[in-house]
Length: 378
Image (cartoon, rainbow, N blue to C red; front, side, top):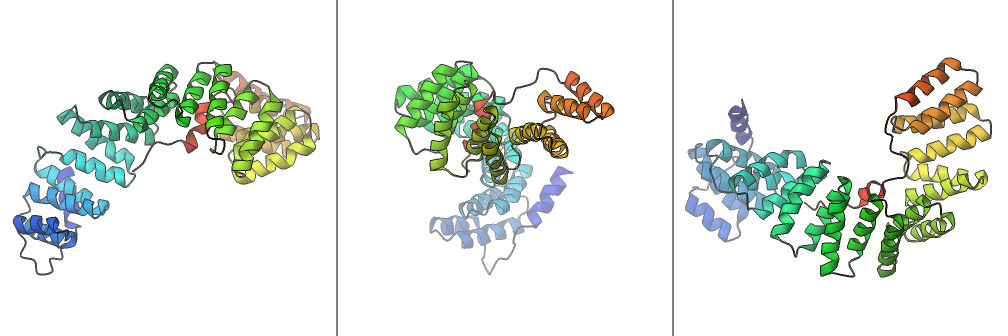
């Protein structure tokens, strides 16, 4: 079935020849002259005359890729691969064309095949690692990028990508080692201090993590996210005064940082200042409507204000965003009991009992900062 599909895909290529006689030497000459469209037409003529010419299809794919016509290059590469899997670099070229289109899942098999053919290919190893990262296979990404960094130890960007993968795979020792490697080369690297702080936080060394984030924010006081990370660590340490200052600094840099707004609202809830908390929580949800803690805090406020239907709605939203967290289930169970709905209360208490080994809200700084820290650069 696959050869048939590939043959069909090749037929989708634009076979308009525009009068070109079409020979390999002509196609190569046109490419060297920078006449890429004419070269494409010449290669198309070659493949039309000989549909079994694997090298011609591979060359066609390369010229299309030079034009950044990656969607057209892919079927040309696939046809070449089907005709002759032993063509040099064909798997790598196919993977790169998929990667450039941000088709990261599709890029993984050809990159893996390229590494089977040439285990020392650092480019394929790096691109495979970044593709794994993009599809959230962080452990696999870390393993692949670690090998690539050993082959290219001076590549700071590669080191940052590896450290980020290690963090998200919860391989904190790996992240720490990699961050130190970057700092050895570049002691004032803001990103390395940030990564070092996240790794230390993951290892439970929060006070040391705070020092690293302080250093990073001193080096780059206007860098987005740094003050949020620092504030978050203070929040985790229950130092709400310092956390408030850091979140406010973050908002002076990025007024749309939804998490900084959220945690300012949460601090107001913890202090019992519901009048200050409500507008902050609502604003945070306007910026991003998937903030579980915002709904949880709103539920807490509405219960205190005896706005029970609103509390149910808010806590249900928190539950739906992450059913594996026990706190929303527990608060709903008590709320339903107070409302006289014993059957609903029993269901929620049963849900609490079923939740095992729950991750508490706000324990993973790396995950909270990951959304703005992707190393993928097609």
